[in-house]
Length: 263
Ligand code: PEP
Ligand code: MN
Image (cartoon, rainbow, N blue to C red; front, side, top):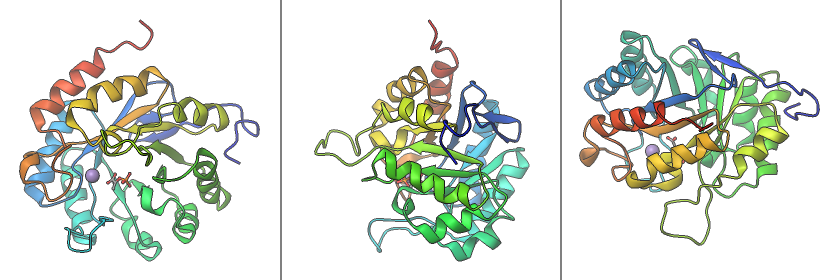
């Protein structure tokens, strides 16, 4: 059902007036994790100032170590929604447990399914059964075909509002956190009718590569870019090395707004 052979025209997903898949560029920005109201509210204000419409932030954090900050859970989602509402932004947040979806849908506009859960089939089925757009991230060791099949799980349950997100894959290369598989973008655009985004934060893991990676993503045909923004990355409870501070985020957006992919 996600195949372009079945449906030649692009799927367009409208989230607060941002129409993913319409050929324009869309951005999902916000902190790695929701840490406090103060923190998300500061970022929400900066996101709003850029004229953007979507605010991300993890409340349920799938961390590699059980001793790392695990997120504020449903309380975090409530904080995120409050800050988003105050700036008329839509909320994008990850859900890791299928049982949380029912309660979480009251607080979010887009259900994010993270790389570590791309093949959590029960989660995919549950996300496919609700009337909310899904941002599906590529598993860190998933082939493009497995990624497309994960989207098929969601759409086959009735929910076709799926945004695919390339976030880097695991390779032998250690210069970046993951290896951004930039060619997956045109492949996913050719093989499916779904919008495709690139997460430059988790793919590169390097602040100095966020802008060039974002330009590459837009130049190769991505519908948008996701990146992480924190008021003070040095004290962030997760992904401290790669989140942008607010001035960096502002210059990042300025560069991308002036970046003409057709030039
Ligand atoms: C995230 O976007 O918050 C995240 C944890 O990314 P990923 O699932 O791609 O690792
Ligand atoms: Mn992160």
